[in-house]
Length: 402
Image 1 (cartoon, one colour):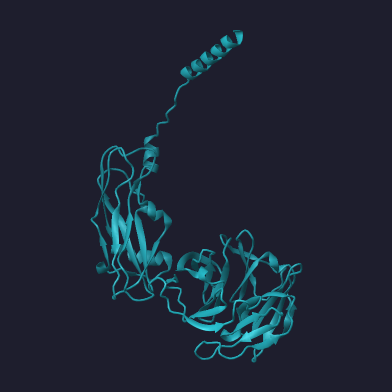
Image 2 (cartoon, one colour):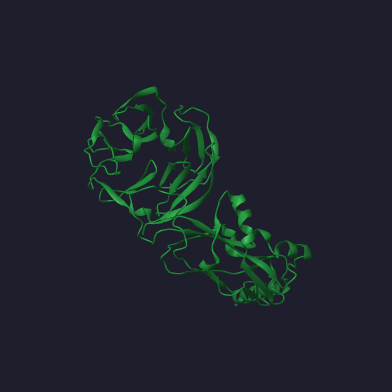
């Protein structure tokens, strides 16, 4: 009986404690409302919105809406007008180092221009933007469509940073119809490693550890039998082409030494000077880029050092955020980055090998086990051991492989 009374008294005590508690509601100041309570386009926070289209493709429907930021709902209906603004083209190109042309008016249509945030809400209705491709759009050309908040009925400020959504319309082939040429069939059991060689050739390490050189004909097909340029290079794990006259080989761990070779006119290789460039290079992903060797560590931090310098050479950090890429490759003045999901990105590079913001240039590259840069072309090796060439590869377009 006593325990039951104690239990009841305990419950009463809890009820009394909660009945005495006060709910504290924080009231924002007018200054805070002005700072955070602004109108903006949420999708504009992502940067540019890229959309690939084919000149012969079907119309594509996009959309956006407007949001009221801050802690408070709209106190009254807010009428908003949005429209394309051609005057923003030049300032965008200057700020981003691009040379886009404005998407012609005949190639898009807005389903109206009015948006509404009703009282008590924060999100407006959606405005539809239909992209209408046709033969007037040039293949591998990108167009810009800036759509901005032009006016609104409230006294609430507009967040100028996210006032405009920029659509970049990339004109490419239809999805799954990108032209390619089969240039070599190796079979599924082709070997241990494959990579670029001098003057557009391919180097392949066979299962017996011999290094084979495949030289293309004028059509870019590897029609001639390969040539043995290295016998039983069992210590070598991978290689990195510096230029048509120079290449470095990395050995397997534990030591993971890097060794420099000169490439002869007949594609054979001879020791260069300096030959040994130090050990333990397996701590990084290596990417030769012009006069530099880029090293990317496990955390995605990219450093540069002079090409053909020793592992102990001073390194300068040039970028972060490169963790998780399946492949990194230099291509002309840019850096290509391949994700495991098949998305291919391009980074413009400065003369000091500093990358800029990335842009998506392809999808579906996971149909290949590996892609390789051969001069101005890109080739892909599939699971069957077939190699396909994409001639005159361009990073200003978009490649929807599948």
